[in-house]
Length: 90
Image 1 (cartoon, rainbow, N blue to C red):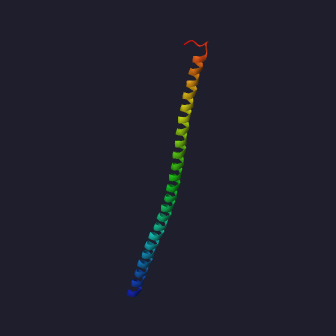
Image 2 (tube, rainbow, N blue to C red):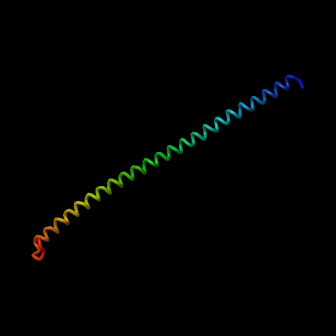
Image 3 (tube, rainbow, N blue to C red):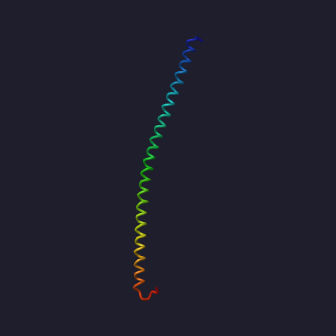
């Protein structure tokens, strides 16, 4: 076999390997970019969910405070009723 044929085969192999390497890197970058975009979407959804949960928690705390106030008012009325009722021993 002539030396220039061997040289062409070696150059062809090197070229194919280089193309495979470049293509592999581009494919990897594409996968990474897809994963980055997916992670960004998940972060956005998680932040929105966290905000909704915080709002519900705030509303629950307000409702609990109103319930405590109503319970206090009911207790005050019970005490007043006991004061007025002649059948209740004090």
